[in-house]
Image (cartoon, rainbow, N blue to C red; front, side, top):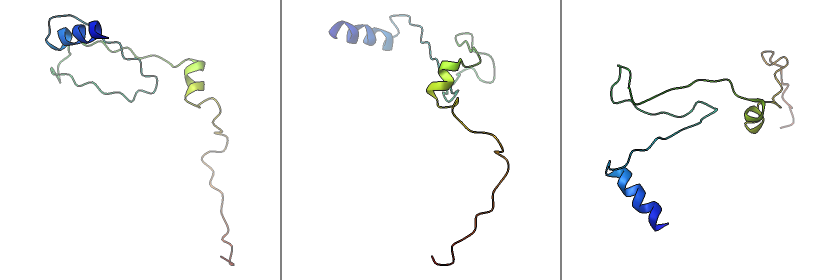
Length: 80
Protein backbone atom coordinates (compact mmCIF):
# COMPACT_ATOMS: atom_id res chain seq x y z
CA UNK A 1 0.00 0.00 0.00
CA UNK A 2 2.86 2.35 0.81
CA UNK A 3 4.35 1.83 -2.66
CA UNK A 4 1.00 2.59 -4.27
CA UNK A 5 0.66 5.82 -2.31
CA UNK A 6 4.20 6.87 -3.27
CA UNK A 7 3.41 6.25 -6.94
CA UNK A 8 0.14 8.14 -6.60
CA UNK A 9 1.99 11.09 -5.08
CA UNK A 10 4.35 11.02 -8.09
CA UNK A 11 1.35 11.17 -10.41
CA UNK A 12 -0.13 14.13 -8.52
CA UNK A 13 3.25 15.89 -8.65
CA UNK A 14 3.37 15.25 -12.44
CA UNK A 15 6.56 13.20 -12.05
CA UNK A 16 4.97 10.05 -13.47
CA UNK A 17 2.94 9.68 -16.66
CA UNK A 18 -0.30 7.81 -16.40
CA UNK A 19 -3.13 6.80 -18.71
CA UNK A 20 -6.61 6.69 -17.24
CA UNK A 21 -9.10 4.49 -19.07
CA UNK A 22 -12.68 5.26 -18.15
CA UNK A 23 -15.19 2.76 -19.54
CA UNK A 24 -18.71 4.05 -18.97
CA UNK A 25 -21.38 2.03 -20.81
CA UNK A 26 -24.11 4.44 -19.67
CA UNK A 27 -22.33 7.54 -20.98
CA UNK A 28 -22.89 9.46 -17.74
CA UNK A 29 -19.27 10.46 -17.17
CA UNK A 30 -17.94 13.95 -17.72
CA UNK A 31 -14.33 14.94 -18.17
CA UNK A 32 -13.68 18.62 -18.73
CA UNK A 33 -11.30 19.62 -21.48
CA UNK A 34 -9.10 22.56 -20.64
CA UNK A 35 -8.76 23.27 -24.37
CA UNK A 36 -12.49 23.62 -25.08
CA UNK A 37 -13.87 24.41 -27.57
CA UNK A 38 -10.74 23.15 -29.37
CA UNK A 39 -9.86 19.47 -29.51
CA UNK A 40 -7.75 18.23 -26.60
CA UNK A 41 -4.71 16.31 -27.92
CA UNK A 42 -4.44 14.43 -24.61
CA UNK A 43 -8.04 13.25 -24.56
CA UNK A 44 -9.32 10.42 -26.71
CA UNK A 45 -13.03 9.62 -26.85
CA UNK A 46 -14.27 6.32 -28.17
CA UNK A 47 -17.98 5.68 -28.68
CA UNK A 48 -19.31 2.14 -28.95
CA UNK A 49 -22.49 0.11 -28.81
CA UNK A 50 -23.01 -1.68 -25.51
CA UNK A 51 -22.72 -5.46 -25.46
CA UNK A 52 -25.61 -7.71 -24.44
CA UNK A 53 -23.83 -8.34 -21.13
CA UNK A 54 -23.48 -4.60 -20.42
CA UNK A 55 -27.16 -4.05 -21.22
CA UNK A 56 -28.01 -6.98 -18.96
CA UNK A 57 -26.03 -5.50 -16.06
CA UNK A 58 -27.95 -2.24 -16.52
CA UNK A 59 -31.29 -4.07 -16.58
CA UNK A 60 -32.02 -2.94 -20.13
CA UNK A 61 -32.61 -6.41 -21.57
CA UNK A 62 -35.61 -6.98 -19.27
CA UNK A 63 -37.36 -3.68 -19.95
CA UNK A 64 -40.89 -3.98 -21.32
CA UNK A 65 -41.34 -1.38 -24.04
CA UNK A 66 -44.36 -2.79 -25.89
CA UNK A 67 -47.07 -0.11 -26.06
CA UNK A 68 -44.84 2.17 -24.01
CA UNK A 69 -46.33 5.30 -25.54
CA UNK A 70 -49.92 4.26 -24.85
CA UNK A 71 -51.30 5.62 -21.60
CA UNK A 72 -54.01 3.79 -19.74
CA UNK A 73 -56.81 5.61 -17.96
CA UNK A 74 -56.77 4.92 -14.25
CA UNK A 75 -60.13 5.11 -12.50
CA UNK A 76 -60.14 6.48 -8.99
CA UNK A 77 -61.79 4.54 -6.21
CA UNK A 78 -64.55 6.77 -4.78
CA UNK A 79 -64.15 5.07 -1.39
CA UNK A 80 -60.68 6.51 -0.80
